[in-house]
Length: 305
Length: 226
Ligand SMILES: Nc1ncnc2c1ncn2[C@@H]1O[C@H](COP(=O)(O)OP(=O)(O)OP(=O)(O)O)[C@@H](O)[C@H]1O
Ligand SMILES: [Mg+2]
Image (cartoon, rainbow over all chains, first blue to last red; front, side):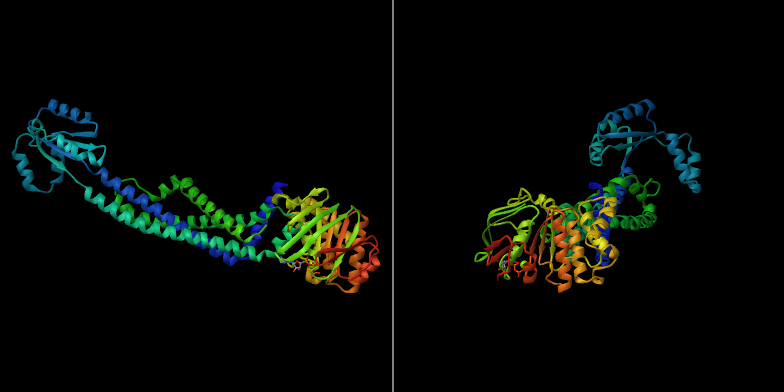
């Protein structure tokens, strides 16, 4: 009995959808725009976060040690630094590594080559590269390195402060997010109003049917269901349309932002794919809830049962 | 089958659509309700299908006190009472068959049952040969017969007819009255609101007369007296 009623309700909903087809299309279109702007919001969020992560990855403190320091002393310093709770890791680069790097860098510079050849032995010291767990820990780590005892073995410190870049990314991202959020909210409000009106008009076009339904003993939920279902259907269509629109757009965007991330393994499309059910499920659920609520309000206002 | 006990209904403070109406209709009766325009006839019909509630008094249909019926139970009540009106209330874009089937569809009946019952009921009203016509391709009498078939689809105990012949010519009117009598013979209680003096007089059945919301007469074998 219930299943029969349900399938009948779905058929009535489809018929009603068809009867006001232009209105239905307009409704779907507005919900579609809402979803697209919400997806923009998600994409900007993801891209900004990943960009910041990439920049953060590049931040470190390099300590250039004097050339004549014993290996055991360096190892001791390395262990000491590693035991620091703020330090994520410490990478050791031997003098030989550094010399090889330096030579590789200046392979075309005859003068440097000559000078190096004229020296006996390796003029370079070892390097320790420290990565902190958190960006804000770098100042603390730098302060511990100010220790006068350490000063005797450290020749030079180099801290690449990318904080400015991070702040810039944060600022740009939050500005973009604010604009898109505002647009999304406006679209959500328009969607609610449109769904409300669509249902209202659907009720008016079906006035005769509704009156007869009541007369022949259709239950209230049976009369209401097609209208609610119709609005849910519009949400579903809009969601599918948004998917077909967003994915090509993402791959287009990927072409541009891919360069920024360079070697870093970042792909906006794989992010959307990995979180497919979360992203689209939440949107579908959200739009269904919004539509169900606004159509129910319209029904309770205009459908006197 | 139908009991009204001291029923009053006011739409506006000074409009007494019905005042202090008490009446009993037994199962199997054929009752005509007559009275001038605005005397409260349709108001009784609307009370019986719980479209409106009385301001005072009790209403009972088929042993069911519907005075304070719950909203969710109204559909169940309406499946036990068939109603037809002067204006037929058919859906113009549906065929005869579909119009009748509609009443079963909305109560969630399976397709097989619809395919079985609808032709049976349309046979009772003698429309078996016009299943696939649209309402505008039918005469007024035929349209009313479709409405009656739809009202009978749930096998109601009571059939309410509010001026069923109001839009019909003499010939069609006679058809419809004969159909109502036939339905009554099958055991359904029939309550008919009418303005048609000749019909009432020729029926020789019970007649209830209303006058400005008051009971003005209730005769076993009644005459149209206004
Ligand atoms: N919804 C309403 N609001 C206000 N007054 C109403 C309403 N419905 C009916 N009335 C009034 O109640 C009274 C009885 O109306 P009702 O429809 O029962 O009359 P009736 O006997 O069916 O008349 P008719 O023969 O013209 O159909 C009338 O005075 C009418 O104006
Ligand atoms: Mg009337």
